Amino acid sequence: NAGVTQTPKFQVLKTGQSMTLQCAQDMNHEYMSWYRQDPGMGLRLIHYSVGAGITDQGEVPNGYNVSRSTTEDFPLRLLSAAPSQTSVYFCASSHTGGATYEQYFGPGTRLTVT
Amino acid sequence: GQSLEQPSEVTAVEGAIVQINCTYQTSGFYGLSWYQQHDGGAPTFLSYNALDGLEETGRFSSFLSRSDSYGYLLLQELQMKDSASYFCAVRDRGIKAAGNKLTFGGGTRVLVKP
Image: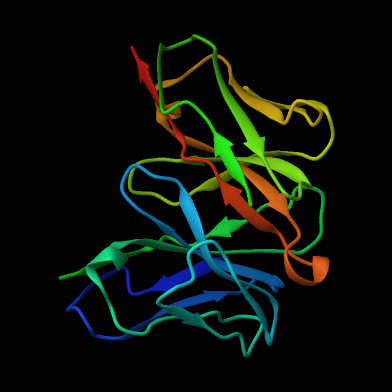
């Protein structure tokens, strides 16, 4: 199992550009989510999904779009990049049930917007 | 909404015991999780408490008091490799009561000295 994979690992964008961060998991998890982590801070939830076709906003959704057409994939789209979106982005997945609700995180995408 | 408070930094020597407290205010609560993150890495799951009491996993233990909206992570027999950031996170179910939506605290940086 590859677990949770994210691409790219690093990205530099200019203000106003758009891009899609990719996330995939091979554990058949129903729940997937996107977080951003600014330096020295905790993780803030951007968007999440509880299954194909079902998504909802998290704490900081503005400037980001998501869709979930398959169980495996959950891409995050930046519509018009801004310097305030410079951050590390983590994708995570888990089962919606279970004893511990453990979330598995991908390695992260380090995004810089100039 | 949710808010969580935890100390920003703790320093201890190898072999010592460290307790990281977490207090929370939530609009919905289903459990408290703890995650570890080494510098440059992704968060990894440590423990989950849904009910009051102590959960022990090797050198790490986690405690929850739902009536006090309080939990802690206890790190025993500290080792150099335990130098990392530790995050508490409150779980609620999100949309369709089917999710595993986490709100993270700001993190506690633990520095272990020889």
